[in-house]
Image (cartoon, rainbow, N blue to C red):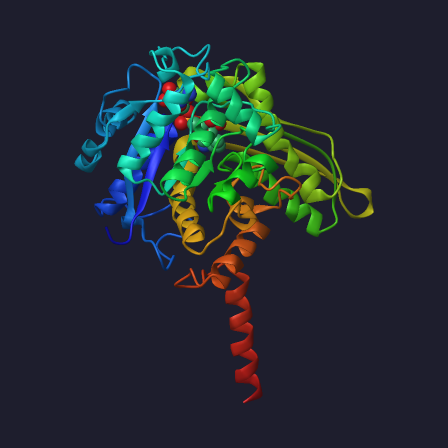
Length: 412
Ligand code: NAD
């Protein structure tokens, strides 16, 4: 099979479809890898080594269609690569995750299978596809931490649907796959609590597998954390932070539901205290749905701070950001780094990957550092693991090397 990263997608929505189309277009040489931080710098896996081998959804409109057909629904004016005709979207478990959305959703458990049989079906699907990495991208859902692995297992065996989330059942199925087929990396790109859940991390570690997450950091939150770092480094005292998003895609529609919105608020808000070291008053959450905005969300940010001699300054930032491509580009790295980590025997979770790519990085208790710092931490991890072909221009290692050369020249 050669050098491959075999990717299974869970939730074939806007982000998953953008990821599939973008990667295949890069592979076909149609577009440069803009928006992919580590482009083709990773030693072990190039972008051309990513292969999409499985896709799962619960939307009747998508099940049975090829990835090619589903991607065409999102990008009707693009030339969708023919390679995406090889994968068909299969039915997953629903557990009410799509409740309240304007789609007709039906899961395996509503289609005559018990939950345990549904898990078996998912595992055999992934086994046939020989997945290395699963990318979790279903509609935003909020989950608590697991009390114990045994309790989750018992609930699924008893078919106790009440109180079970789709995210937990997918993660459980991934762990059964890891136990019976081969180790796997589960990339939790949504705000469900998994990489921050000690029970989930331990379950992955026991199976020589990984859970990365939680919640991809793609848009305004990483920018806010970098601005806060800028102010903190200059000892400017932040008096308050406001950041809101309004978008018109299905995920923003889903976020009009208060429980889902709370999940986002939780993963977004941790940055303030983590970066500043004190909890400045803040309002950071998705605030609205406006259909004509489509996938290109509107973000507004206001930060007020005290500078030298009591001066009060304000930062006001307004942006329109294409939501799905922002996350999809990052996932092109994460799927490859997840496989690199698996190959090198990492298990449980990897903070260095989570810290750069995720809003609320696991494991539990770890800090959400600014992305400027997280980038350096990640480069260092990649270098330690001999996984970088080239030291990126923006890396501290690069500047240190430059300084060394400079002083050597001076002294000679
Ligand atoms: P989307 O609504 O376009 O796609 C979600 C897909 O999941 C839909 O196709 C839906 O039918 C499917 N789904 C729902 N429940 C499912 C289940 N139980 N099993 C299988 N499929 C299921 O959303 P999106 O914009 O692609 O975002 C996906 C996820 O990524 C969201 O949870 C969001 O919070 C997270 N996320 C997105 C961004 C971003 O877009 N920039 C950033 C960070 C996190």
